[in-house]
Length: 231
Image (cartoon, rainbow, N blue to C red):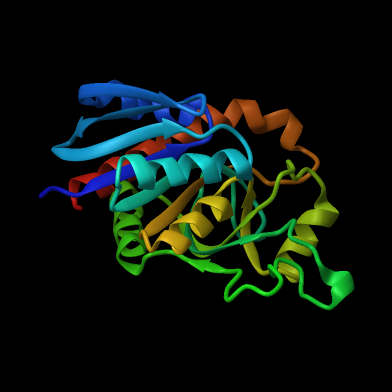
């Protein structure tokens, strides 16, 4: 029996290229989200756009698991670079995902820690990390394997970026990955988050985000395509 791979993007730019290449496509709409199931590069996949934010991402992921019984989840899209060595166009492959806006520090918990829960840093599947790394190398993409930080806010402050790097050891910041990761972890479904850097997550983000989103999404698409070919 063939495995099914769930692929999630947060915006149209992040999924439209995959939808264009799918064969035998069948669409299902649930909770306002459209899921497209079909074949792509000989693999059975389900592609969907989660919408922006952690709640949307969590709902989308759980439906992928419950209704479509996906065996792997790949989340793809753009993010803001947090690590100072990352530049626009670079790729981040998740080692772990953490919610940077989970803040219960007044009660003695470190930032990002979910109180009274076994884990708050959700590890990506090593085999998927390796596939993503090989895909980046094959595409000639500069990449970083590191911590993806997620929160329901668009980071556009140098001070916040510095905190996310120095205090939380983040590689990049976005708005969905940790939610996808937590749902996958709770359901024991292997996952990886791939992010192409569209901006530096500083004060210039509002100027260049739209300009680089399409370019970054195309880069992510090529990486995912290479992964699917070798899964």
